[in-house]
Length: 438
Image (cartoon, rainbow, N blue to C red; front, top):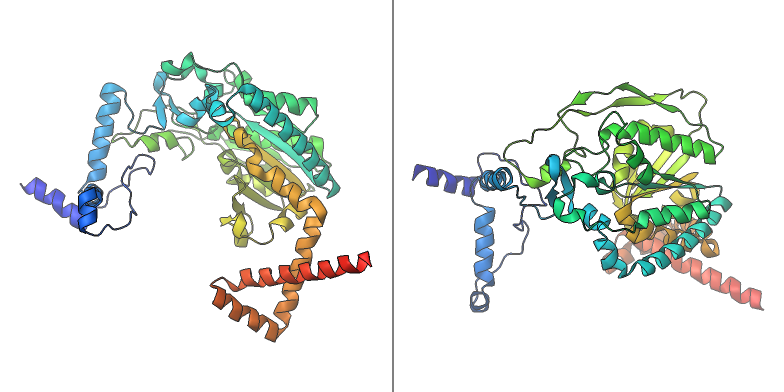
């Protein structure tokens, strides 16, 4: 009774701090809307469901009991509570998305047939060539980095149930073939990682990781810098590994899948390299502006000295979120930012960095959005709008009316300022077009 009372007390007070469950395994909705008790909600069962969710969410030491359950399931029966993580042989953990990619399930869901996927790839490569031409007109160089998945590099330790389902067609390999045919600058880590996995001094993917291991980052960083030197006139520093720093204390990227399965006891893991490295021979080297569009595989590069080789860097994660060396642009949604056109215009180098499963949504729509921006003087148009915005700000009466209008519309002053500047620009453009016709 004392034990039950203690659990109940923890449920009401949460006086004992507990480690939260991974959001990928926690099935309870933390922020669900409160359900009021009415005759209708009682009859349809929604109120009872709400009470059950609240009871589960507030059960004392729920995190501890969940981990105990997960530990017994994993250790005794080889089962994982998280449906997005699979256990392979030799204690390897795999992400469901990577398995669905190598077995062709993602491609089938997206395109239906391989021929449709190939047709879409050819269209995307054609648009990429157009994009490269537009970038070159603005003095910007382009590089595509093909990244492998863990299943592509280590298929031999995948769960047995999926080994016979590995597809004969690889969309990544098809894109690489098209890039070679069209002489598009790229780095093929997808194929190269397979050739060096037995000779590289450390694991390319850890047992509990789904991204390339931290040990590979100096090699990847130096390879990209050397490739940029080959395709541009810039000179970049090298990468100097000071200490391989072997440790069982894995980084977040190397231990992320262990985090997702929420076990009570840590898994037994071999030592992995967490290298300490820096830039070397930086004196006299160029520091161009960099824009990267890609998936999470760029995150460890963004958090390393790699970005110090550039004067300014911006990372558009999935072409949706801006991560930048400039605080005002850091962790902002692109559709809420003004000046993304300026970032593209001022970039000396654009890198697209994607793994094979994200090739299904090729460059996250960046090709189309960039081409739209370049079309019909898009960059100049944005500059003209910004100039009008400054003119409005310099006129106290005009700017005051903008502020009042923003309050009436329920939007920010900055947003309303830009809307009015865009309207003025369009009126001026229409008037100029009419004059040219006459």
